Length: 306
Image (cartoon, rainbow, N blue to C red):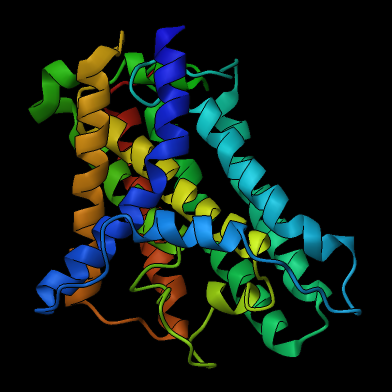
């Protein structure tokens, strides 16, 4: 019960900090002071106190988009073990539900953008649908690498069989899964080189253009939901790279928080040293991630995985 409480507390409280770490890292590498680490918390709090304006052309779909998207990523976070191998809502086959919850949130975000009747937001929704079609195979193949050794599509069992004792011999396949998941993380969270979350240029916007008409509490849900998505996918990546103890405790919480912060720093470094890809190059980037995961999965079977 204590581990579950720690998982819920980390899921609700830590995500906005990661966006602050990314922005601070980018600012330091550019020779600037940058915004405070807690700026995202302040932005969410300020937006929650504002009112929302709705166009007469929109329906309940537009209002439901941010709420369902946030609920979907929070539910995915409750399925994933964070600081231990126990998740609050884990069940047999939760890996499949985890992936499809992200799809549900993405669908309602695109539906809300289309509901405005704006061709501009429809353009962003079209790009999001196209990129997600290439990102999902990479995600499923990476999850397959995690689940095959355990013979189970359940996170708690899969994390319990990660071969930490034979890192140099068996873990290259999991390293391939980690690299593929890192590419998925950049795509799902609209980070460079797939998208620039700070841009406002019409020809380059993907996620940002879909949420332009949201304001007040709705935009707070969007901002907080994006931070939760980054945290959840990052937690999955941390479990692949860091030996988090099965019984959790303070050591598990420290390792998870340290891994998440290190991952946020890595994202900030990547965004500082790379440029945004052209739109026609993004599918190639995501297909490359899927191919890398497929090679890792084939190598895992070649080594005699069940």
